[in-house]
Length: 295
Ligand SMILES: C[S@@+](CC[C@H](N)C(=O)[O-])C[C@H]1O[C@@H](n2cnc3c(N)ncnc32)[C@H](O)[C@@H]1O
Image (cartoon, rainbow, N blue to C red; front, side, top):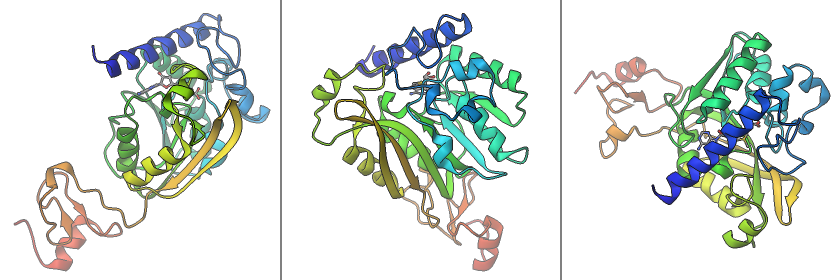
């Protein structure tokens, strides 16, 4: 087993235990016994009015380090994706804000968390939610389909953060945005110094620095990157809110089309992945304007 696979399995096992503890009533609100997380993490970061909207188990399973709903400014009809949705707290809150014409997806790799989230969605009577099993490094959704990506204290747990940023960019529609809570380290802290302050599974050792986070998002194509610390989780390690947008003029080049020139204002011409180069125009309109069909 590679070091990365082993680390991911350690993370999965710890959060499986946290979900089981909530189901069995063994974990306390805000700090389930099975997971060592900072005592300031969890449901206390949500206003009482938001906690009161949800089943007790969804609140008890909260392991986040912020409240992405507070920054995502969700609107009626939007499609939201929560990376590492855990017991579903942010998916359920998002579902209420986007309403019946919108949809909230949760993505998590841990079966026990997915089962807990489904049970919580059922108790909440949420119909516009869907929980997907998978890794945030390979999001099982098509490109350009999501308005807002949220996440709460999960990206620091990833063993491949560039892949998470690239996948987040891919699934967002041009003009889409992210509203993420995560742990971020001061720039001067080395990986060893971050590890001294807390373990990987408790969201500390795997944290990026402010500069690494900003540069990682920019390298994936994001613009308007803002990272705002909210409180100190450990010495030099902060819970922070991360915002960024996918530029409206973005066009992802489908992997199959890399190296091919676009034709007729359409990328990946005449393949199932073809997209108009101009986001406001459909494939048919682009071809008709250019007076061409498949080549
Ligand atoms: C700290 S908990 C946060 C859960 C939730 N966001 C919340 O605020 O309560 C981390 C969650 O992310 C999931 N997770 C961690 N790494 C993941 C990965 N690479 N892909 C998918 N899910 C992951 C874990 O299974 C767990 O449910």
